[in-house]
Image (tube, rainbow, N blue to C red; front, side, top):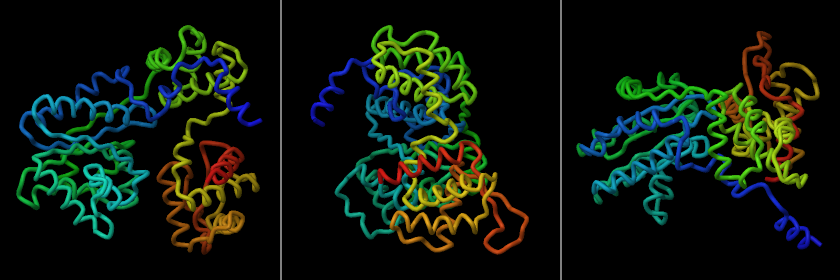
Length: 395
């Protein structure tokens, strides 16, 4: 029975040629409307290729404006350009929302060069020393992008950036590590030392939100890669571009396009119409991305479920931290997890706040355990409750 269903679905007619070309992790060969920013990055890194120096660059912008894909495309081209000039240079992209500690970031760098490296039980300073020794022994260079660095610095402080930018000064050799930092804005730089702050401030690439016409160009470019010829109606592209232009978010526009294609396939329509785009919009809230929720740690998910459930039940705009913590303990019991202590629960709330998933502010009540109030501003609490329950079931 199930085998028949599987084969039936695999053989079903589809509007897609390659749906993976619409996924967030896909890096296109051509970055539509980001050519000038790519040129800026190239200018900043010219001394790295010509003089074997190091560089630090900051890329800023809101969600979905192409920060990550710009860095990844540049990194791939940088490796090629270095190789053609006889320079041994490696590009590495690290998402600091997933690798949340100094240890995990440096261990990931070390693992990239040698997956069997015996790094367990070693401190981050020793790991970084091993990275530098590896680069020196091979006359090699590393350019590493620290994606969502503002979130990382808010949680861990500036020590990672300081260590990566000071390796050469402390050892007296050439600095072989260049950094590209990605953040929503420059405010996190205030946490860095004056010298590092100054370097980044002079090398900033600020990405503006996309306009409707720019989003349409991006959609058309991806349609050529992802869909069969002629199956996406022009009105559909215009509608999706208009919807996503409210936020200037290309990632949201591409998700809408993918979901519209899925809706067309579900109906065996053969074409992707504006009505399919409207159905897609009804399923998606652009302000909170599902991949952000999916990447949360288990007790962060439990905490967020507690917030959503408390707000949904009360029908109020805010919930007090003390009340949410009680709900969190009930949620933990429901999912057979041992609830964490108050200090850890508070850390989970702070991380959710840093990600922009919840909003925390003083309540003015002055009651112990209820001095702060929590709200969800971007999506309905009912939707978020269902989404978290679904993710926890998958877990």
